[in-house]
Image 1 (tube, rainbow, N blue to C red):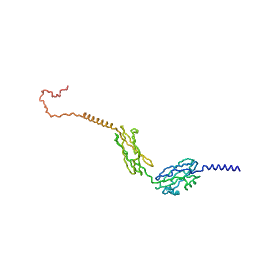
Image 2 (spheres, rainbow, N blue to C red):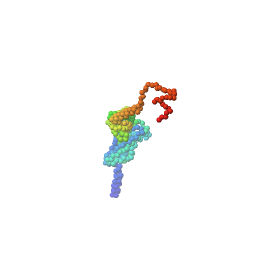
Image 3 (cartoon, rainbow, N blue to C red):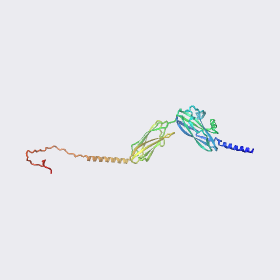
Image 4 (cartoon, helix red, strand yellow):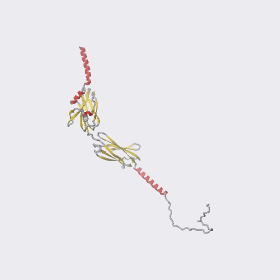
Length: 338
């Protein structure tokens, strides 16, 4: 008898030891309570659900996804049975989340990834789903608690076809050809908002020398006060920074914008910096070289001008006999030159 009692006691210890891991506590929280997204057909996105066990014991949770009907106040009115015939409108078929058991020890926090893949043929509209988490010995037990409203979870709200477009177009970015003082030389850029929401682009223009070294930068819309409305085209003009050097410079424009999705615009332009005193010196030297060149051309190309005189008669003597007196102006063709 004592043997049987001891065996029963031992069996009880074994059973209790086996069941301890399956003992669950409802001391856990789920966050966030609402996931609200705007999407288009074919969109894929991932969110994270955080489970926190603030109890001291071990708990086992199961996730269950259900389509729900929501009232005017965003309260859950009813669970909608899953439809396997029309995958385009069955929101539960878009959702990917672990269906295995989720184990949490005391004071443990665990993140569960949630992936939504909107069907390519989904019509525009508003879709709701409920992702519930409940403790239980198995999935059926946990799912029964979720359907009975005895579980915590996340409401998923998906607006298909209502996704706002955030898009800016950089039409042009130009600079003056030369910059030679603080107030001489500007750059201009024109932006058009072709999206659906007001946007406030921020960025800068970085000036580099010919070797690629950064010289200076100019912030653009640093306080975010310049807002471009949908369909609006705006041109901005700013002064080029004064650079006390002669040479070619590169102006590199960068603008970032977007609320839900960040994007950027880039463009490059080149100009020359010439300090005013160097410019004056160059002008003086050019004027001096031009003057010297003109004087040299005038001297080298001078032609002696011979004054014209009236014509005079020159007497011509013809010898009639062999005797003739020579005169200084006579030319003797027979006489050899000495």
